[in-house]
Amino acid sequence: MRIHSAARIIAIVTAFGCCPAFGADSQAEGAASEAYNVKTYGATGDGTTKDTQSLQKAIDAANQAGGGTVYFPAGSYLTGTLRMKDHVTLHLGAGATLLGSTDLDDYPIIWPAFKSFTDKYVCQSLIYGEDLHDIAVVGRGTIDGQGDADVFKPRGAVPEYGLRHGLRPYLIRLVTCRKVLVRGITLRDSPMWTQHYLACDDLTVDDIHVYAHVHHNNDMIDIDCCRNVRISNCTSDTTDDGITLKSTAGRVCENVTITNCVVSSRCNAIKCGTESSGGFRNITITNCAVRPSQIDSGISGRPRGLAGLALEIVDGGTLDRITVSNLVIEGTLAPIFLRLGNRARLYKDGIPKPGIGTFRNVTISNVVATGASMIGCTIAGLPDHPIENVTLSNIRVTVAGGGTREDALREIPEEPRNYPEIMMFGTPPAYGLYARHVNNLTLENVEVRWAEPDLRPLLVCDDVQNLRVNGLAGRGIENSEPTIFMNDVRTALVQGCVAPNGMESFLRLSGQSSRVSVIGNDLSGAKTPFGFAEGTPASILYQTANRMPD
Image 1: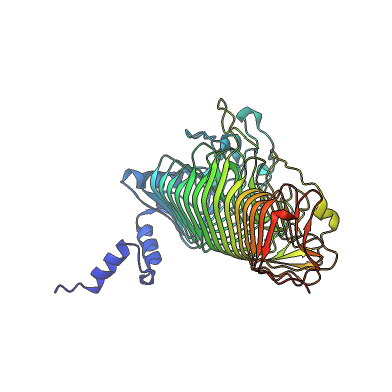
Image 2: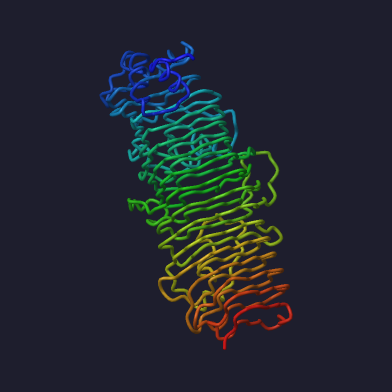
């Protein structure tokens, strides 16, 4: 039997990227410092001298040698745009800061060959790459965009370039790149989105830390029309959206995993949208914590954040096969917001207007949300274009409460073309979940409690077909609306529920509702288990094996 030396075993294990206990980070840093050290190419790292040319020389040298690691030792490297090259890793050592220049002339205008709606946003970047492969940005250093500088403050239109958001560079923008790794670094104070990955394949973002509260559009990360993406072990606190999937062109964003992240945002913590031209497919989100932002910047959004989870299709496209599990959400206005709309924005000139998109096959489970506002959760499709096949299971939510009868009875506008946001419908008619234009909705072990008495129903379903409710629980008070209100609900099964004590009624039916079955519930707490609106016959209801009031 052949016995390998310890050194041989370590080399084999390290080659396969395993066993960090052997000090892979420190070994890589030492090796990098011997290779393409930016100071060897003339970089000063003094924070005042522009090092752009020296840094680019190091990148070019590594590329021309067939690949290598460009190492940044401790220091502050003031720079404009750096262009990445194939087979190049930027390694920011501990104490190293890549400092974005505040001179707009240091950021050339770059139009990618891949056309998307972001061509109308901004066209400058601190780190830029296009049509590259095998590239990385790693280390324990920092990329600081200095986005609070006065030169970046204007955010209006720039007509000469056809831009909407001013001359504000991204910190990292990679377009149509393959085999990309971003790991370990801290990114802060971007003038625009912190990171934009457009039409990239095989992207890994791991253990990064993002802080951005200096400007509008300070998203943590935007994954746009990308495929085969892994986001893990990240933390962020941003003024705008957190982990954001987009589709600003006709290419689907698909095969994305998001796990073990802690996200703080004044807007939406985890989001698919708003741009959705190509749609979203095969997305899994798990083991994440959402908490309020620690900074009250007042720039955009709300201090407590908007939605913990927002899934949106409004520009055509298809959202399909999404699973979300094991989330804890603290303090956002709404824990969950699902929206199919019809903004129908064109991502480039000369293409036909998209039809209404498709939203289907979403499973959300094991969610605990506390401190939500009176808005609660919303699932909203459009007439004749329902959201399809949605399951919510093991959901525990606490909301502020305070809703009135008037809130429960108000007409809710459709708003098909409006920007999708949790506040777009005003105060919803339910304190827990408002579901409208949905086909095949399952609610399993969903519990919603209010902090202040609320007269609205826990659950309102309007134009819902194939509804299953099992183990729904909430609170109730005298003279409030029923626990469940169904309007135009076709084929529903309600079981395993307990009516809160003192409720006037448990279930009220109206409109063209039909084939509603209520089986195996404890309805003894309600004064009258069932109610029917004028014109809605009692014959649509089948009930059996329920515990009824005395």
